[in-house]
Length: 253
Image (cartoon, rainbow, N blue to C red):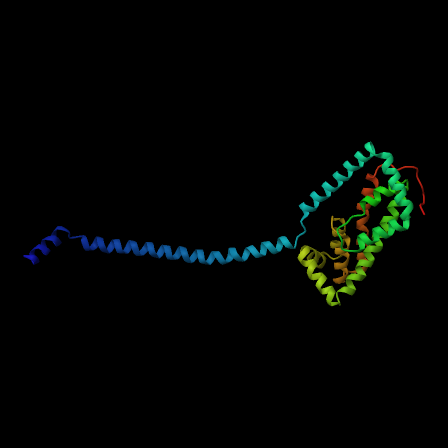
């Protein structure tokens, strides 16, 4: 009876085995498709991971132009605002303080301050000294020439310092610190040479970072002589924006 019942069930479902085979085949095809998709994702993932360091390296080797542009805009705007406010509300007091300051340090002191500011990798600016010199009554061309000469002397000195530091252990430590601080700067010097020095001189960064690095990389010195003058436009802008001074004096001892 059991054999007969089995025969009857087979007669009732003659395509059961075929359906089971087809179902197994479809499941196998789906599994194979999933395996192929996973293998493709595994092949794509290393490419995506390898692209991220490359993009990060490209960003680090490129100067942050937008940040620099914003910083220049803010600096000039703040300087103009303070100049106008001081001119309106404290003109006489500013002129008096400026004259006392310039009587104390004189043009040699102005030269030395600018020389130190552009010759050393430090964050302080000499723009207030330009303002005080103009307000003290020193002719603007004189202020510009003194500051420009000091800045250019600092650039030449920085080139020599960079050449010497490269051979010292402390110099190696300094340039490692510089790479961490401004990772784009050494790459700019290597790729652009004196053009990189000129670009860096126009940026709102300490000039010494550019000149010391240029000396360490042995940037062509004749080309560097021209690139070192590109700090002067910044000086000229702030001399012109300092407004009118008091009684013009050609020299302050």
